Image 1 (cartoon, rainbow, N blue to C red):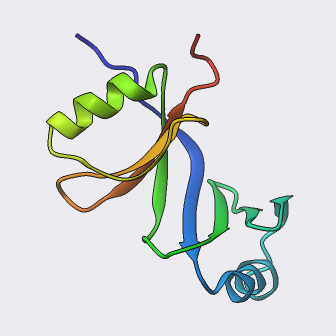
Image 2: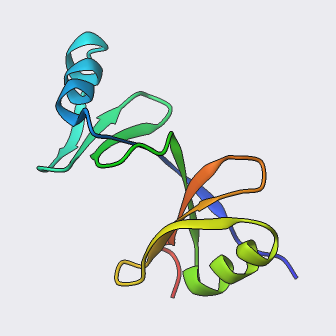
Length: 112
């Protein structure tokens, strides 16, 4: 059975030093702002969109999109991934794979 996991262009970092990170990426690196809120700032890099989110650090997070977040989460946990954080209302969850990579598993916009 083939599974449809697609990456987005989004990479997320979360940090308690949010204001400093926003200044670094926006001023020091000069990346253009693509979106802005009180807890999340998006920057265009050319190859990907970097999002800086307020909160507890967990390293860079890649973004993978699927049609059924719940089913795919269960399949990935059975394969050795660990759920780090979850929000069924969105729906999305952060997972760490058996090799240490953290990624967001979110609902694909093309999914029914």
